[in-house]
Length: 124
Image 1 (cartoon, one colour):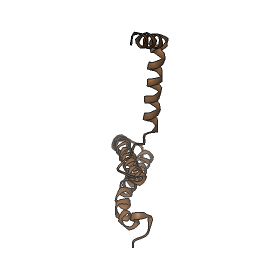
Image 2 (cartoon, one colour):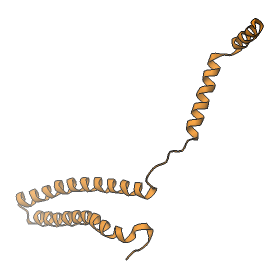
Image 3 (cartoon, one colour):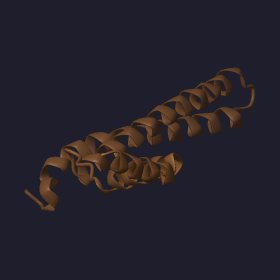
Image 4 (cartoon, helix red, strand yellow):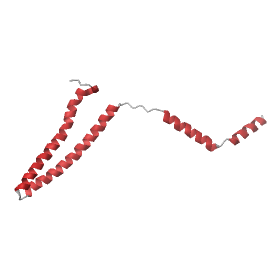
């Protein structure tokens, strides 16, 4: 029995603890890379969420830009002594309002058309 213990102790003296820890780390890392994460949503749901987020941010930026530029146009219209400047400010104000209305109506249009295109086919 003592001989067997002596053999075992010689065997364990040859094992490097660093190598054992490294091999265990590699096995755990490779096993975790082999696993596959399953998501409950498909790519179209994710794309829709991303596009809605981008559209909302574009609306926010366009609304802020429209308010700032419209206020500048209104200030120029009210405090200008030149008729040409007033006419140009009125034209710019009209363009700003039309552009802002078009950007905001895109969301309503897409939400109206979306049920007809569900599943990638026309359901009209």
